[in-house]
Image (tube, rainbow, N blue to C red; front, side, top):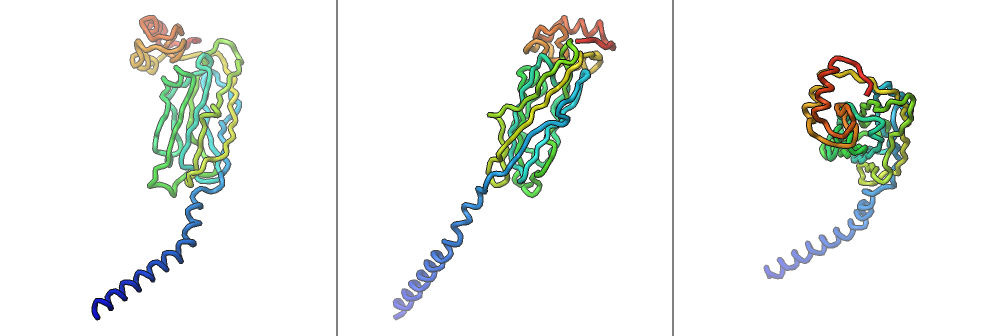
Length: 237
């Protein structure tokens, strides 16, 4: 009798459990598809958009999104014989603190390409940036001898990706900057001295770094001698 009673109780519990499972399953199933919502819109642009560098200047990289941003990949191209970074990239969005890839000044000046791949820390999901916000500050200096030369700072379309906190890619638009350059008058100082020692014997494209004074692609004894001879002076590079 006891065995029959126990079996009946077990069977009843099993039936109730199965009933609850199938009753709730249709209600839960639609929630799976809420993760991937319709894509939002985002735009990338510079401020100012048409600056004049005389000889140096600053550009701000801005993003506008209509949903919170979780991941950004931005790649830019420029002509390093026309302009170069003269400082490391300054990041300006603290929430995107997972630095997956950020080009160094030397890398960018050597290749003419600049990469920023940033991610949101999962523990700070509530701080995901949205609307309009500045992603980075870029400091450039002219490398030309001809006045009023125009050169672009462009986005590389195939290497752009912004993803929202729902893991959906934004529909992207981007606007390049058109920069007017003045001849580069440069003051040779302790900053140059430290930069030359740090990069001595390094090679790159001609003029890849400001202390490649003769623009032969190598930081060498000639550049050191030039620095000593012109230390404290303003020169046209």
